[in-house]
Length: 492
Image 1 (tube, rainbow, N blue to C red):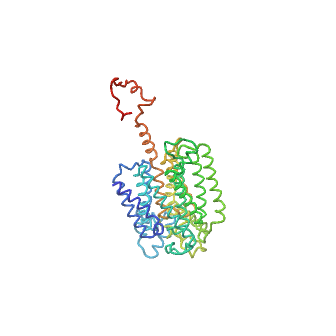
Image 2 (image 1 turned 90 degrees about the vertical axis):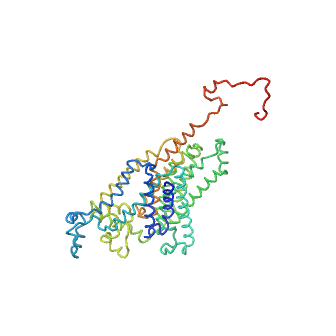
Image 3 (image 1 turned 135 degrees about the horizontal axis):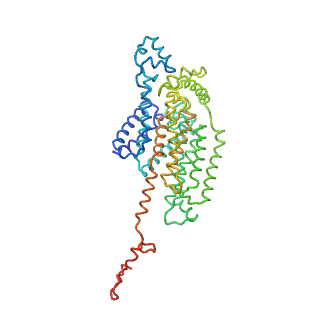
């Protein structure tokens, strides 16, 4: 059953960016069915899911949050809540009997139900990720990097072509690198979140060497010509591909987040090349110089190579109108999933020709829809994220899984910051990958890997011919052969 769960998780990761990054109705339906199957098969093996109590509470609150808005409440009581009187008066004007019965707190109940159903997808991905062992987690990270690399390569080809079949019928994106997404900012968000993983594996692998080699720089350089050295070169190629693709998305937020990700990765990894800083102070300085050089090189790109569109220039107008709606609906909001239907009442006249389906700020949209309940949930998860860093950031040598967890934490931060200027987590593909990174970050996989490595070291058989053998073994005298015994030449 675990194998079925992992196969379903892999299918979710692979299918998520297809069909306009999962935004088409059929694609969303497929993702929901896969998520339901993943939840069922994962909970079937619930004893193998190491979820802490605080994680279970968080997931439970997240799933109960939209259902609160679907509970029937007397219409007279709902009319006392801010923002509901106009809707109830409209129903009464058209002769509806709603005002004399029970109504739901959500202004658009059908959209709230749809939002709850899709919420099962990231929850399933998060739970399914906890079924992975360290080796399995590393393989899924490779899968995510392969997906990001393919999206990056497709985006570069789209930018080079300018137009044509590589856009799969997406006419408004011609001239930009978008991959299979509908917006260059959404592709840039995916690449920025996955870049720390590629940097982590690069830094870890570049410091690894065969065990029979010495610690001299000459041996370290010769290592790059070995098979394991080629793996490090491969990770370096993925890093450069992701950075280059972010540049050609021409997304201001994407390039800025890439610069921040490189800075954070440099700070986290510069003193831990290979896990134990095998190159010493020189390696730390070289790594810091490379990281800062990349950031400095991207700085002029941020000013000269990015472009803006009509809607992107209007995002501040949209967010200002969203804030007005938040004040109007406090403390309960309009109901999860109903932003696109409710926002037109607050849409400015200058944006009248546009259909605004999302605020260009995930947090404002959640507050618009969920009010104080959404604010409390966001605060709860922010505290969990900060607390988890005390478990992940440990002194001493780091294992490969420790590097991956730190990279996942940095990726989560970049994704959360991207949500300040974009509806990043309202894109199904990015939400799925965000949930996968969260599953890695909050897992206990690095501790499992460290305990396994410690057991392997303790079980190593002592060398009986060394001077460090145990006293009990050295005290036993070895029998001496008689002088007339013929020696066996095959034993010499």
